[in-house]
Image (tube, rainbow, N blue to C red; front, side):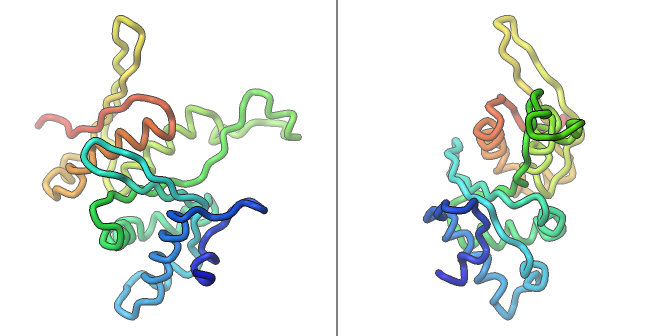
Length: 192
């Protein structure tokens, strides 16, 4: 377990949880295995957090990566998700980059200008892109009902509907997005 802890980046004084250690050990196992084709890419990758989310059909493991390694994770995301789902039987795995939202009082932190990528809307849009992972978003609609509640419909690439693995994760995507942003979203494929 000591070697696996090198794969976890936490704030000083914060101890990793049991789930985080499990994910780090699984990443280390994939990196060390001789048959792995992504072992070279995994060398520099570490996690910042891991959480479990209850979805309608099954549980999901949400793995947060530091933003500085997110580019490397994006390259191998599909293969790494498949490998981790083999290790975590009966659980979906979702990857998200660790991003910071700066509020309107950003000058207190000593910044002159708030970057557009740090606004609440930009971070929530980026989280949405991260959650759907290997598939692509082709459209979004926001539906506002008479009582004022908002529901976002997210349309995914219809090419991925045939693969089947994305279709069974739609409820998981909605549960994870609700947990991370506190916004309702429904993921679906557009009608042909």
